[in-house]
Amino acid sequence: MHGSTTRPGTWSELLGREYFGTAAVLAGGVALYATNVYLTASLLPTAVEEIGGHAYYAWTATVFLLASVVSSTTVARILAVRGPRGAYLLGLGAFAAGTLVCALAPSMETLLAGRAVQGLGGGLLAGLGYAVLNSALPERLWSRGAALVSAMWGVGTFAGPAVGGVFAQFHAWRWAFGALLVCTLAVATAVPFTLPVHARGSRAAGRIPLGSPALLTAATLAVSVAAVVTGGASTIALLAVASAAVVAFVAVDRRSLHGILPAATFTTARLRWVYLTIAGLAVVSTAETFVPLFGQRLAGLAPLAAGFLGATLAVGWTLGEMPSASASAPRTVRRIVVSAPVLVGLGLALMAAAVRDEAGPAAVAAWVTGLVVAGAGIGIAWPHLAVAAMNAVPDPRESGKASAAINTVQLIANAFGAALAGVLVNAGQPSGVRSARLLLCGFAAVAVLGMLAARRAVPARGERIRSAPADATAAEPERI
Image (cartoon, rainbow, N blue to C red; front, side, top):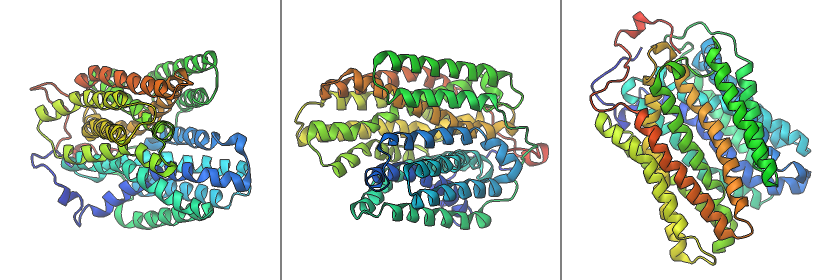
């Protein structure tokens, strides 16, 4: 077991000979997931021209998200049964199989089936990126490892539209999935040489729960449909159903012996605030979904330029978290996490102030600045929140489950954020300016309110959080 250490880790150590392979696999799994999200979105218009299925267009994202949520809830159990190597090979295998089905799909129905299988593998990969991190890397490298894994969303935001756009331009959308398949197989080839067969301290796995994932699936399905239906009453009803399903999930998971969330979520105040802060930032990050639309309608940008405008939030996220991950002093970390929601709110408010019809270069430059600032606010806090989740549990053996749950919380928050964004944008119609301002100002308010959770997510001055003992390998032979 990697124990606590007073020596801070460095980027050169993480990317050096000893840990480079491990870091590459952890980051590669999340990069595949993120790239696939944006690549598929850029390919779909071309794909449906060939295979049809316009009526099911929105469901290509819905089935992928639903499957991802389901598989993300099983990460801790699969990791305990199969170990890091087996779990990654299972996730990569499912992702590769789904990608192959998408590449060969003769109809939209087949493509949807492939997307579902992709989602099962992708949700597992995204969760494993955090769950394996705390046992595969020493604690001094946790924040940098979390930053690297999270930064892959920024990579996917650019790589997905760029690669997908090139292949779509030449009407070769199937080959784009083929290229993704090759990358998946490349990561799988590295797994046996970089990850251990058994997790350090992995313990016997309990059964995979059924009630909790079913309720999460119901909540995700409800908000996914709410994001695409028309009519305020229907949207509100679906959001109410989703909220009720989340409340029921918390009640069921709290009583379960083998819940999705670690037991400390309900007994240790700090962990629940960590998850709430993560959820708040994840909700706000979904504002980028509508930025390309605003770019085209309000600034007259070409689709490709508008797509990259939407990616600027992810760029800020990456630029913010890389230097922030180097911070280790408790007082500094606390200031970073508490100030992050305010920075996000200011960035979105800056863009909202510059929104106007027929926006010129100066206005678009202000949009870019605001999105980068908002993204940086998310990025500076994210690695420290991931480490806080790992450290917040009293039982070191539950640290793996606590880190795996980060991805589940993020996926659910993304689904709710997408639905809320759709509601705000629809409320502003038919005015594009009003829609943009409602979305940006509404999410800015959500971000600032997130500061209340952030203040409780990290230790106050002089307060210490749990740290794994140096002899944890001998004392706790079973940890995931």
